[in-house]
Amino acid sequence: MSDSAAPSPNNLDAFWMPFTANRQFKSNPRMLVSAKGMYYTNIEGQQILDGTAGLWCCNAGHAEPRIVEAVAKQIAELDYAPSFQMGHPKAFELAARVTSMFPAELDHMFFTNSGSESVDTALKIALAYHRARGEGTRTRLIGRERGYHGTGFGGISVGGIVANRRTFGTMLTGVDHLPHTHLPEKNAFSRGVPEYGAELADELERIVALHDASTIAAVIVEPIAGSTGVILPPKGYLERLRKICDKHGILLIFDEVITGFGRLGTPFATDFFGVKPDLVTLAKGLTSGTIPMGGVICSKEIYNAFMTGPDNMIELFHGYTYSGHPVAAAAGLATLDTYKEEGLFERANALAPYWEDAVHSLKGTRHVTDLRNLGLIGAIELESMPDKPTVRAVNAFKKCYEKGVMIRTTGDIIALSPPLIAEKNHVDQIFETIRSVLNEIE
Ligand SMILES: Cc1ncc(COP(=O)(O)O)c(C=O)c1O
Image (cartoon, rainbow, N blue to C red; front, side, top):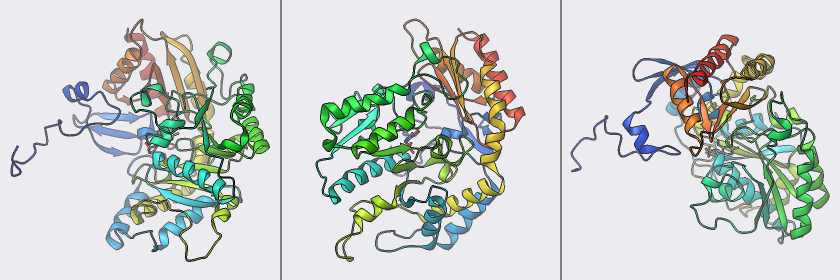
């Protein structure tokens, strides 16, 4: 094509879509063109109920007027300002507001643009922190099987989803993994946090015995593993992990990219489980998905370890052109206002029991082998078709979309995470649609 030929809006070819079966999608696209509240509208004019808050991110619902207005105003007033040796007020305000939602010791925030960058940033801070304290031998990073920490090289190295790792070479060296905590033989159909499996945290002791604590910098886990299909921490598991990390001087990183900002009816999973990490990764709900932004929360102790030496020295050689971007910061502030003024975390908490009943009402439905829930998260595990893993869940996804409900699948698991503005009638529509679809599909 010559430079002067205008690209056709109907040509879908050029966009290499992420985590998508490109050829299949482009032969039968699902194109969303607008959104408001709980609903998308597709190009055919059909309303699609959002059962997944986009990709676990639109916690305040779509086109929330406060956020729309704040973004429009900000872009006109200050569209961009560097954060390297310069600043603008809203990034400082947002860092102060977000850290004030955490326990007092977690009082600093580094800005990124996504969950993946937050993860890489947290891992780098952990490594540099130990070095700053004279423990530079602590270079090993511990993740968990089935963990998802985004798609950067750091994230896939500590992550444990095979498909995301196997084609990308050797990744970071010096990484080990805890076992995952999915124990369907013991915990299937648990309501909320499952009973069995806290002892799986003790595997960290085995890893420490193997490598020696003096080589281990940090452990990173999702308090609730989301992208792998919702795996909940067994009762007491996170507490045990915290204890073992403390015993051996290992930093504990909670990846709260999906659990942050009200998903469990509390501000963060840290609050829900009452376990305090040293670093927290955030993104998604920080701006309710409107403008890309992420962040890493870290403790005073970690921050202070860097604030030594002459004060003309850059303390951490890390950052992004868009760290603390003014438009994202404005979106973040308006999002926090919305959460507060609309009481969205409290609303999520109030709706959670109804949600739990709705999830478990699918017990006995065709194909269903397990149901899991916590806060406004739900998972429906399906029996895989013989020799065709993932096909049944993908078929369910397509059928639900045709019937006007957006769900998300991973493997043969349906994962649900509606915006926190959801009402009972939305919950009913989501589960009635899924039930009818499961009864229809092979
Ligand atoms: C726990 C967790 N960490 C990191 C990420 C990566 O976030 P992003 O896609 O914004 O890079 C995700 C995305 O789903 C996630 O669920």
